[in-house]
Image 1 (cartoon, rainbow, N blue to C red):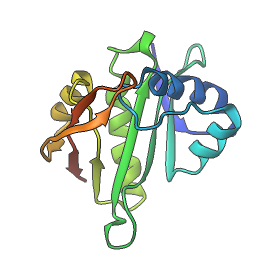
Image 2: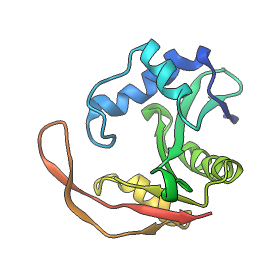
Image 3: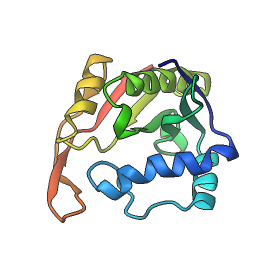
Length: 163
């Protein structure tokens, strides 16, 4: 499989919503509780500083995506925040790694100096391993910082990377 990452286009909204909504519906990683309709997805992904879409170049199928935006405003506006999602049926093929590396390049191009992840859920071992392997630093643990879909509370582990 050959993977290409390119900027989000309005024509990607349906595929992007489908992939994003898998994670929202699982209720184990993203803070959002409501799925995105296609029109909402188009507005949401277009409103980010950058949204990257990973495609299989042979089939044209969307495989995953990320969003990149400021983590805060004003004097902290140089810190980016990102969220990543890879379709469950293609996980384990280093697509997530490609998305993270691409987001680092885009963040630098946009003038960000740091990437910070606010809420990496402790049970998301794949993400934790990836971020560690790519040089992100853990900031600590926030006990019970994430409420899962079934109402349990899990720890979150914020991370950062100086670009």
